[in-house]
Amino acid sequence: MEKRWWQEAVVYQIYCKSFCDTNGDGIGDLGGVISKLPMLKELGINCIWFNPIYKSPQVDNGYDISDYQDIEPSFGTMEQFKELLDKAHAMGIRVVMDLVLNHTSDQHKWFQESRKSKDNPYRDYYVWRAPKENGKEPNNWGNYFYEGRGSAWQFDETTGEYYLHNYSVKMPDVNWEYEPLRQEMYKMMTWWLDLGVDGFRLDAINRLKKPAGLPDSKMPPAPPVGIYGYVVDRAICTNVPGIHELLRTINKEVWSKYDCMTVGECGNLSSDGALDYISQGNNEIDMLFHFEIGKNPNIITVNEYKQTQQRWIDLMQHNAWITQFLTNHDSARQVSRFGNDQQYRVPSAKLLATLIHTMPGTPFVYQGEEIGMTNVHFDTIDDYDERYTVGKYYTAVEAGEDPEVALSRLRPTSRDNARTPYQWDDSENAGFTTGKPWIKVNPRYTEINYAADRASKDSIFEFYKKLIAMRKTNPAIIDGDFKFLLMDHPQMVMYLRKCARQTLLVVCNFSDETVPVQIPAELEGFTWERLLTNREETAPSLERRDNWLPWEAEVYQVKL
Ligand code: NOJ
Image 1 (cartoon, rainbow, N blue to C red):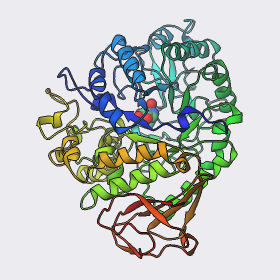
Image 2: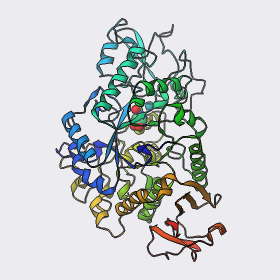
Image 3: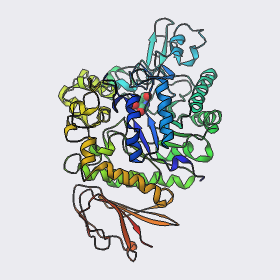
Image 4: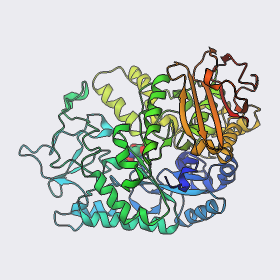
């Protein structure tokens, strides 16, 4: 496969709202990001992915866009964005925007026009349907935000029709069947690429195409929310026939004309259907995020983790490239979810990083991972902001669940775990803002923060730096073959990365226990040199090792 820049990239995801506030309004801003560019440069990343920073009423923290070609005023201005882009580029850091093509805000001028009359030129930019004979919604779909408590259709008095909103009622789905809408979208993406951005993370990209005739979902309504009669069927608008043709068209009209990176968020997609999207010859998108590892709330075993990785890595044999990430702004914090955020917070954060940075594919670091930020425990639902947690909570409580029980159930998977402000130091509000933060700071900030981590001899940030630097000097990480060893071992994750110039071995004890394991016979007879460890206290020689400390992670290379 012809080498592209994003295959050598390490991407850092910035949730601007929670990163760094420079004007004291409690909301992170572009000035904050500019001020931290040197820190990102030092970390070694060479690409930023911004969660949406366009003008938005912030119903869904920016995924509800009211103007695609302007910056959200609480984040800054277009001038500041251009300054940021120039500064980042001058430092060798590319900038990728999050693009939401499935829906807009109801405040977008297209929708404001669309709802005015049935013959408005913007009417068909959105999906409108007449009520059923009994006045009810056109079908039984429930919106994702209210877990079956609400329909995916909203009746609009002005024209007496319903509009489709798979997400919030304030986020109407756009209509990709309508050519003028497509043309507007192409123009808008072209405008950003001409401005100099380096690509897009494509929100919910496999949901753009809706099933012909918008049929009822056959999925039974799940109790207890079944009482409302709406079915939250995330699959029904996902990977619908015609989606590939649509993506190929967008690729031809826009993306193929630039040296840009496209990475699509693809919920409800298994490795079986993935090649259609990412096989290079198909000319659709470059990479995708799947949720076979990272999706809340499933807890994955070490064996499942290995099997899933293997399935996705196998796709790379077919002219395709994959992503490596464990969490993002939509999930719990990785060290809390996959590691141990108490006794082994530091080594487990480093082990997870080791996997992300040495497995095949492009690594994505979510802000705060590089200092081992953890989940948050808010005492009341009022402290939670994000729509899924709040929606699920009230749905459950309305259906009779004890409020405390409902909250305890929802806490570990809340997306707010990842959205609390970046913990810069141990001063008030973790140094994130001098004002009142838009969402509370994680109380663990006095112990876990950037300044403390940088001062520690066991710094996670330093470990990330080493891993990211290794990528540049060890060809096997990007180009090497991949082979798991000890595939069926329930705790150890061990693999070889081999290219013509180098053989690397990664050994990780993915558990809280000391694991007695000897190295497989096929590794004997070589001299192994340790390149990296998160456990300096262990012997650097692989040959004599027969047990591995909890969360120990090592990288070795064959000494030639
Ligand atoms: C996926 C985004 O990552 C998430 O944060 C958002 O709520 C939905 N898409 C809707 O845009």
